[in-house]
Amino acid sequence: GAVVSQHPSWVICKSGTSVKIECRSLDFQATTMFWYRQFPKQSLMLMATSNEGSKATYEQGVEKDKFLINHASLTLSTLTVTSAHPEDSSFYICSARDGTSGASTDTQYFGPGTRLTVL
Amino acid sequence: SQKIEQNSEALNIQEGKTATLTCNYTNYSPAYLQWYRQDPGRGPVFLLLIRENEKEKRKERLKVTFDTTLKQSLFHITASQPADSATYLCALHTGGFKTIFGAGTRLFVKA
Image 1: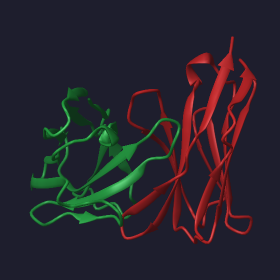
Image 2: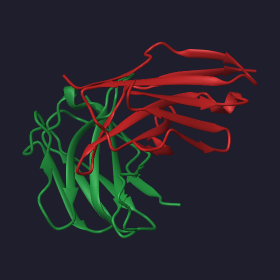
Image 3: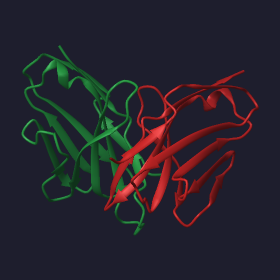
Image 4: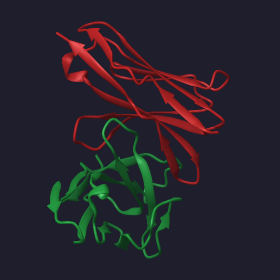
């Protein structure tokens, strides 16, 4: 089955530093990847959609200069949280859509998530 | 406004019983609806997809119904087991490849 990995699984950083999270599709080519954040007991909130080789599309209210997304290849997307602050502490989850299967549905395969804690 | 509602209260059931979770939505006309399972500290795992022209979909002990008139989907787990304890998320496809998730319902299955 389709597998998506994320690295790191958890990270603790100081306020003002930048953190990079990687999302990889391991056994399929992901033409589209999605980045979500989730607060405790709340729904997944879509932050941005990234397509390989083009700029990410950010959801309303998400600062593109703070959350930098790079989707340089069909198997890798990165999210960089720049100048992190305590309010950025959250669970960040990526997902990928298998663009090569020709499927007309949006079945997304999720990574295991990254827990970010900003001190 | 557009809304997806899942029962925010946890559902507690006895092992062997059927668990039924509800997903209601307003102001959407989704082409299909999906159910995911999420364990604490983990990403969601895809379970089932049901299209607007399908009334019911089954997979092993799982069954999903989709009533576009009532704007409701029901998710059933038959012969539930403690290992089924998790949060179950309902997700609607809203156009393009954008998916909107409900907040989920926590299920506890007691042995």
